[in-house]
Amino acid sequence: PTDMGEPYGFCMGKRGEAFYVLPNNKNGEARQYRITATAAGPAIALERTMKVATQTEGCVVDDEAQIFYLGEEDTGIWRFDFDPKASPAATQVYAVDGKVLTADTEGLTIMRDGSRKYLIASSQGDSTYPVWEIQGTSYAYKGRFAVEGGSIDNVTVTDGLDAWSGPIGSWQEGAIAMHDHDDGDGKQQNYKLVDWRDVKKALSLP
Image 1: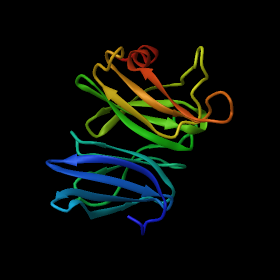
Image 2: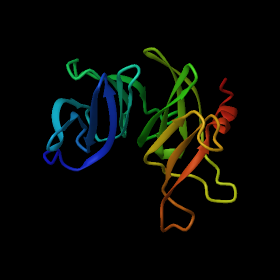
Image 3: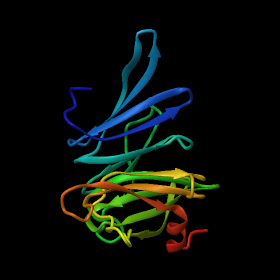
């Protein structure tokens, strides 16, 4: 889309056999576009527009529960029914409080660990990552963690992050990839990988 200004966040989701892309912008608007394959190539159609009051950032879709999560930088985390025919009204999951979640609210991701699901956010203001266990329509806060670099640099000022569930190479229970604003030289940025087992140990998760 070219009429919504600069996209500031982006995620994808699936509903039945339909695939969607969801860009958002600095004006707090998020759009739900359906992507279909045609003989002439992919086609895109706008099915719904959602809105929060101020600038948005990260988002993620829980395909299983059909929930769309959206981060509003200075305000907190919101949820929407992913059904494009549903009301575009938002429900707040967690508000920025300067303790658990510090502005800016940036990336969002979901880690699936067996029968458990966790919502993880980037709390950019203090370079931490709060974790909530998703329990239906409620969210149990499990703690937050920071990432020390050890022989490399610490992870700071993260924008986006993404979680992979299940074994991936040496990460036997999954891993989290996160943007690192400063690679230690003050000049370039990169990404770091964190073993989910280390996060579980730090937060005493089952």
